[in-house]
Image (tube, rainbow, N blue to C red; front, side):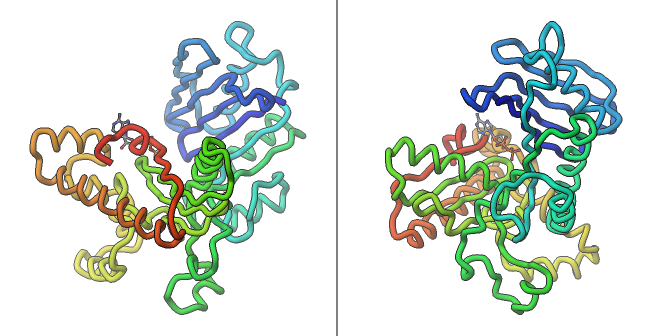
Length: 336
Ligand code: ADP
């Protein structure tokens, strides 16, 4: 079966058409600047990237353009839409309601909407993609794949925060984790490489966003991200874990609103906040090479938090068969 996979952001949309039998990617691409002007990069397997700038006033138009590319007479990879058997949508937050991927129904859409409080930018964007596909490909089965479900196996003592218990019951405040699809994939792949499944693994997804998971026999037992992705490790522009009182103290000092504080903690902190230069680890590495002390400090802090988590999970798991690194920094940066 050919499956169209869609990862919808607020102004971008990544897609791949996958042959589920061979697991090969038939075509992939990226729509950017949706709602602004529109930019498309489309790449059929084995061919060069095709770049164009079709108008993309909304996500429905963008998905229409993707369909045109996939079925194009010259560069298309399918004759018609009928060849596509299903659509998979990446949805960031599934709260406690979703413990596995599921077929999208009206009820599922309603529940994803309810989970939007924890992912106010991502979940609504995901649903825009779902609705656009429903209109353009009516009747096609669609599946929601959540970033959070892989972590739903954590024991309660790992996911409840030590604040008044009713905040968990009433507001759903707890650790959910993220990057679940990545942790699940790399741990499954590592088990295949090891040739056994009774393994203890520590998986490190270190990209601009970064998280580490402890996985026992294929089941997630702890992870570093929390209620939102801004927990655990220091990241490109997110602070990760620190004394919670820093937040209230600085809000009083800066006289800023919760929204302004969210921006500081998510977009102006991490590598960017410490280096004062960039959230991109390559720029930090370049800064270190010319002796920039704040880049050196940023890199040391970044690495230190990764070590902390690996050590913690090593003890929690009672040992470890393999440590897996993935994502932009994890795969490429020697310094990490
Ligand atoms: P995200 O998906 O969270 O945006 P990625 O997984 O694409 O993040 O990773 C982006 C990060 O990977 C950036 O900080 C970038 O500098 C880093 N990165 C990519 N390639 C390299 C490399 N060759 N050496 C060092 N860092 C790299």
